[in-house]
Image (cartoon, rainbow, N blue to C red):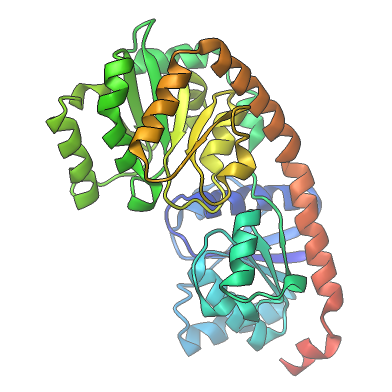
Length: 367
């Protein structure tokens, strides 16, 4: 198949990394893949052997839409697969201009008009699938769940040396209890609720340290609010703000526990990656997180926006290293079985073929 992937994000996020990993698997399976993206976006700077790139701002200007449509006519794509809101809307417009079938992966849960106009929708979790049917009125015969996946191979390359290197960088003591939070510091990720739990955690687990991995802006009001909590409760020295790191898997393996306190999480790749690293997770009962974390088996699920519940779960696991170890092993086995990239990418390929076969040949001719 000749496949056009469209993604509109400039900065690294779950949708972009999934598009990258899916593209790698599709190329390895013998397909031709081109990525339509905005110029100088994150994905264009990734090493993906065999992929081609084409640029558009996807702002729906008629001239740009025509330019991309003319280019597509020359390339003779079999299918379009879109990721992220601007790309989704642009993909629907290209469908009507070119007749090429369009499939959209729903990476989030929000009300948008374009969903019903796709030929097919792939939901990244069962929770997202239910939302799309209920709120965006996507017909049940044109949507299904295929969980997004990550590159699990890098979690097989983690060594004791790489974990010790991380611990030295963090200047942790032998008895420190290391809690990790991974992801951009924005409101929907719920960091504030963990911060409100820290005073209670500190009283019960005085040797804890919290490590934040992910992009943040110290001038944003939300980040300032979080820092005020630390200052008021005299916990500034307990938290390390590391920003982006390329070896996230090494940090996850070094954590004793990962916390995902999200208010809204359509799937939760951070939880998946933490389990792949063998580290148990405390996470909010929202979106797709319960599809990844088996409560009391690979971690603990707590109500969202509840600092006291987060504190209880963290303290409970901090006091039981054998239970954490057992949870980490169970979670790793579950992730490698249920979120196997090859199996999931094969499901996506099957959807491509089914949708392509269902499109009347005269639709392209009419376009």
